[in-house]
Image (cartoon, one colour):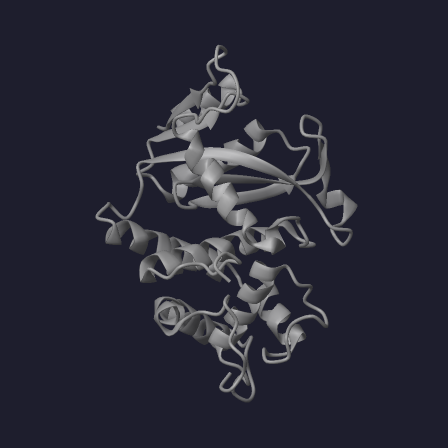
Length: 275
């Protein structure tokens, strides 16, 4: 939207060029299915994406708090709620570009799995929540497969890691057949290791040395902890505010889109440091 105030979360021109083809194709497909009929859309997709990234980064509520320079919050939320996997698609495309830029094969051969239990807001239905007895958290659980994010699954916090990750492993085996090795922490069950083996994936459990005292970086495990730290830089992810799990997954993909577009264009993430 010309003339409006720019925010640090907005896409630069270089970052816009990275996402332009996917967004344009998505809108064309929507119109082809009769979802965007009538007069031409009032708002370009970049302004809509900037607004969603603003919410993702700042944690502001949709209703009433979205700055007036963006399209109306109801329009922005409608596009976000009907994204139909476009953020997952964008994340996958950008992840491959990052790997190619760094001189690696586009598809990975090894990945790390972990989960994070997070509290939910009051607008999340009780049926979508659960209790993580080990961490004493009432809310949801995010199970992720990373180097850079490969896939994510959001469930109730009461769902055991081995159950959620069985779904993840099956998804990875089907969609990313190049992955042949994964690392998990000591909380995972042996039957998950055996199930992964049937899919052609060698799952290795990284255990902490019992003799170690205090904090110690575990091999491979630090990668997933780094990713969870990146996610926490986005205030919308400090708690789960989304009524539906698939929208929570979309917010995680958005955080990674923000990260990978900056990585590809060598742009730093603005922080309070140095102000």
